[in-house]
Length: 174
Image (cartoon, rainbow, N blue to C red; front, top):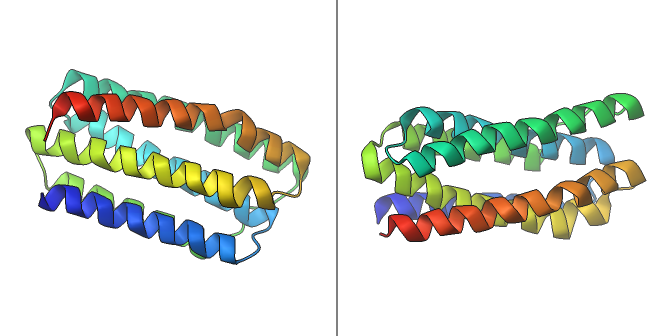
């Protein structure tokens, strides 16, 4: 239970970040930073899972997170370069990074089935928090139509990740 509790804590911190962002008017440069940071957090966790997970299904999910979120970051980087927008660090991106670092620290201390459950529990909570931020903060605040279109385009992948993580979570049990 302690492991699940820490995942809930990290997810709560991410949701607080999203709530903070929605209470602030974020600009396109800040949105770009949030997108890149959120993806990098999941890439880092996915790399750890692909190396450390016990379950082949969890390892494969970790590899998929690295591949898919690296692809989104490539698209985001290409777009902000084209638009001449420099991602602007902000409280939400800083909180995402800190939460990701905390999650990695906790995951590194776990092994076997405990690692697998903690990683997947976090992925479920994380993808839900990211979807909430995309829907309630990032898309509504994006001023540039191409940036908004990218967010809309990648949203279904985040939904698929959430559903896949939930399926794995159910198969792992508690």
